[in-house]
Image (cartoon, rainbow, N blue to C red; front, side, top):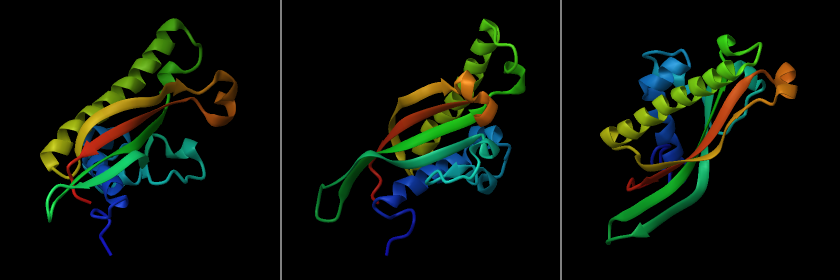
Length: 171
């Protein structure tokens, strides 16, 4: 049986989780500076959490819509695929309460800045670590803020989902 990181389907998920947890931007976002193991506890595969509000901020990783392996020689294969990476985080208290154009814009900018820092670092680290060569990132959901009617019960949060395209790492 293959290991977690070399399994044909699970391996890319596990390698993305390791890369994400090791990133200083994600560690800072989830309050786990310098601690990849604690940061990894904020990454769900699959997303099974009793109370998402208690888990925020968090990431969720799963298979994307693509996965293929092509034989390129007797002993080598070319791998590629897509993973789904989802983020959810509470809106900071400074941007809740009275909703003005300035506070709505500031909350949106805050979330997008956090996500951009994490994704930018993930792109750079994926090539330096050579564990999962990320070739592209595509926004597939959001960014979306909690509907005002649901904030009382669900909390005030943002979420966004991305397709992470990768290639070249044998599984």
